[in-house]
Image 1: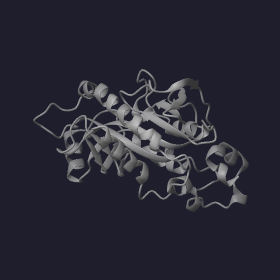
Image 2: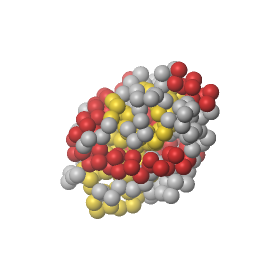
Image 3: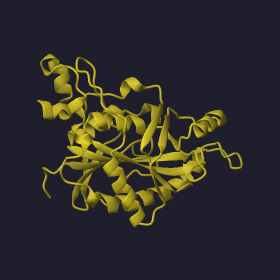
Image 4: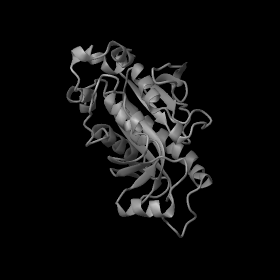
Length: 289
């Protein structure tokens, strides 16, 4: 394997805490300027590619959504030369047609979080405003859709993921409003990952694994942790089948639009970049140094 080929990152959500398919696995404890990631990253080869796996909530599911250090997670992956991320995440369905254990590949987000200041790497003397009209890598999303269909998974290619804070699930009023807005799934984690990956010039796509109908479907019991976790094992196995098919198909060269996202985003002149901030963002700004 060519060590110069950029790596692939897998962020595992609820129920997906490890990847048995990784060969020659090694543990990487990464220190970042933004603090510690959720857990040590597990690196290894997967279908001939260098892959790094990060359990989003930590092994044993110890970290709540609002406690996640998304900056550290994405920074740690970028520091290991990750240029593609597949984010696997549990979500609730807001529409009848999306059933538990289906997979939805979001194409859009709606932000209902309150922690936006932590959803960027920039500031402290270097300003950047990424283009985010298309927040998901279209090419990676389509690759995942083709892979899912090939292994017989029920997949929906496209839709809007509304990101709430959590950790509590929705009220009936919130769930019904999200449905009326036409949103498709609801979760607590993925939007910050997508924003930060774009700033880090990483192509990201999401596998949203449906576990429940939130609480809008009044003929069913409202979503609970027990409801969600009942579907997680099956969803984790589905995700692994798709990953086995998809990873060998990811390109080995960084030529997608997301890999050049900062070209039109950086607004502070290079000569004005503070030395400390430049050093802090070294892995992200390496093309410009």
